[in-house]
Length: 486
Image 1 (tube, rainbow, N blue to C red):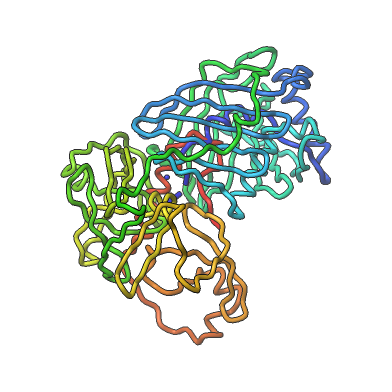
Image 2 (cartoon, rainbow, N blue to C red):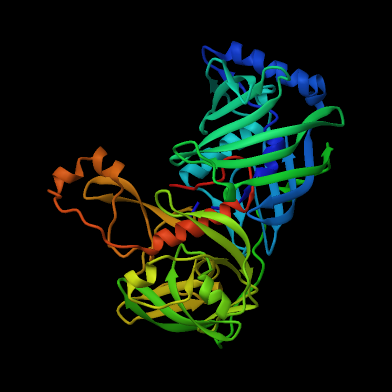
């Protein structure tokens, strides 16, 4: 789900005050646009600014909260910490890696290909490298184009930082201020609107930032909108390395059995794992999905006495959009594995139960797999969870390095002699799924004489994608933390 992952907007509000060093035939023309922006937002005062600390309020999907954004303009490092209704979280860039802390407390280093590109672009923006080329890598630029929008003229430049993603930058032709940033977001576009520029210690920064997601037809989903109003912006705040460092996970999980290991019997239905557990002492039935967020259906949440807050848009496949709410329980159990004060996504799973032929309450997965050593024995229908220090790999186990892509492990491998990147996902019912671009690129239809086409039904990957997308929307974020595709 692109829930990849719901608050970068806050830091971007300040990050968007600059674009970086330029190369290419149109660098000089773009430099004039950038120079006017600098003059209009503080001029030479920016030469001595080192850090920014911004504090404000966040609204998204009917929820209210607070956000604190930190920036180091010398290096492009950043960190955002937020509350939004019943959920909390954080994300940042420590100078080497982007990281995120989900509402459940899970901390993840974002090291997939797209995440690294995203981090380079955001660091590029944060360091104001177009004014200060020595700080960070250069960017290629298009020639500025004059465009009209909402009755006002704008100078538009597309900037692509070295190793990063392209950003479409809109500068108001009258004020010369940066007022809009667009980024590709899957089949759609992520848009950040910057407004209410005010003076803070000699520089002008936007105190109001709105984030929208446009579909392929350019339509915005109101439930996906995030909005930040900054109350204060502190220039040259004292910030040390720990302010940007990836945090430690809180000790909110444990195995209560002697020996720190628990074994849970499961049923394998339609190649999906179903196991019994409990929420706040009440029996629950879960589909176990390695990439799945803690998720309950609205009916199950009501049965457990949990009332969801908010109404955020969660996307599945195609144009489908569903309401997503959030709730926090006291305890989640799977066997003798316990999660304290777990956060849950509340959303409908549509026809999944009918397709599966199984009645269940929701999903568990990533939050457990992130905290425990897990062994899945499909033959014995047993799920074993162990405290990290108690985990012993099965005999003859082979360790395979991976990176995270929206909670899904991505490994390097080959299909016969064709190299590729493959996700490992217990939420998938098939042994191997190949994406159409990969199939076309390598002529696999002809190679394997593929003929038949069919609909295999609704899988839980759709549900997981919805929940992850909703979590990303709930984050105060820079314009592009909406997807982590490897």
